[in-house]
Image 1 (spheres, helix red, strand yellow):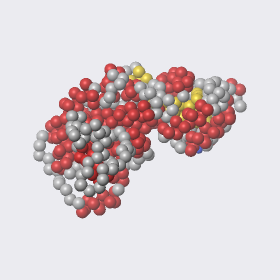
Image 2 (spheres, rainbow, N blue to C red):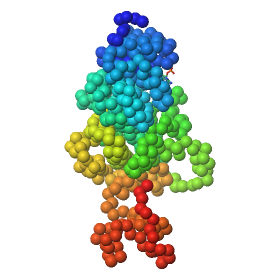
Image 3 (cartoon, protein in one colour):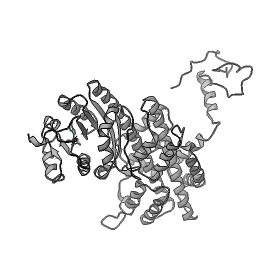
Image 4 (cartoon, rainbow, N blue to C red):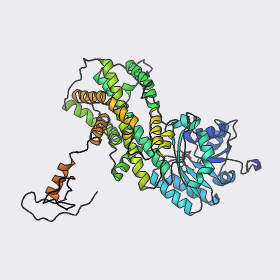
Length: 493
Ligand code: 2AM
């Protein structure tokens, strides 16, 4: 072992795939000495001789040597395949750790695994951090969004490095302590769910432009370029502009040549499952996940397209006006999507005692990550004004913005229905909005039906008590004159 390398590294990283390599180079650029290791050990030497040549990065050929290179308390970042590999690796590292050492999982772990790993490692006297890392390869290299959570005592030890390598927005690092346990990975999961929603909304706008307005790819790209100068200014709008304009070697746009089946790795689905678990109406992300599922049914859709007719769009109006409406529809739907995402964050924070800081979450997403946008600044402002805000839609800025966007949004959704253009996310957003702003909804009828067929009982509206309903919390009506007055016990699923 090289004597001079002994315990000289500020931080270590295991897992030399592209994200791992880029994070190491980023830390190196910021003046930290980084030790690295990889299961396939030959990749360590390859990395040192190529990408990391001329840097201060040091490599190890065993986990024991790797741990010996690290200053105490050891800070070990794992960037390996999520799942059993993380547990296996932690088990391999543990024999070489001392009390107070910190294991940081920067992979795409599911949050319950991070909750469990923190508990297991803390029980052994170690600290654990589960950190969301977003921004892809480019972000990892030049400034990702980092969402660390876990053992609170680890934060002062890693704060400086994490905030140094993170993206910056208006001079503020896009990295702050998220909360305890799996909070970091939970927030990353919501980030990814929101990313699904943002992309679905953009894809629906594309369908309107292509099939509704009959625009060509350069025209669509120019429209996105315009949108990127306004309220929609964001990374995803910017790259949509470029992807739409991109030409194949034959000079034709590449997008229409790409098979229309979207893949998914699971974080959108996890977000939707968490929403169902918490009973939160995160409809837009749910629709975005299901839209990908429908996209995957290519053969069935091809068959259906031959059998199931529908209207053919025939646009004759003012295209400029319609594109403005479309921009407003996208903006309003996006407000709904983030409102819903934050509803879920609020519930998770309560249920898991994550104690999330909502303003700083929007700040963490403002730079470096895929959903980065100007829009997130308004969310930070809303939560900085009122930490206890019930809903983003109740913030004055967003209430005003969505009210202003409403006419165009409604025109787009109506037109989409008349044209037969699928718009699951845009229309779900509008339905949520209309349901949310309705003080007296249609669930009275559902309760009546439930009591009719299942004696599930109901409560009455304040002021509607009468002789029959008086003083009774859970009322059952003998709707048919048959059956008794026995009601089912109430429960909330
Ligand atoms: P490898 O180069 O030896 O395949 C992304 O797949 C990264 O995770 C790679 O660095 C890969 O190592 C690593 N990885 C995958 N499974 C692993 C495991 N069970 N233990 C350690 N590293 C693993």
